[in-house]
Length: 88
Image (cartoon, rainbow, N blue to C red; front, top):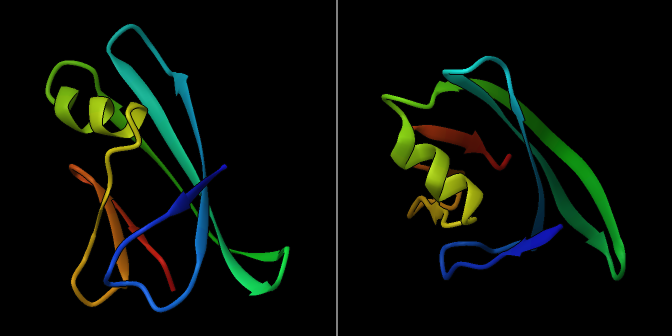
């Protein structure tokens, strides 16, 4: 689990990343999002699974594997290239 850090966030979030090969050319990217409710207590607030092509979506896959995310200026979305995850 990794804490999401950004100047655009008012709350504290953790993410859990999992990736699984689907075929020779495709990979499934999964993310679980947890929001801090109380000290040391987080609530699962979302999950997203999407399949990407290793050929055409290489940048998205590499950003995901490196956990190189961006947070939208309104603090509502986390993105890894084409993989967009709502935080609320």
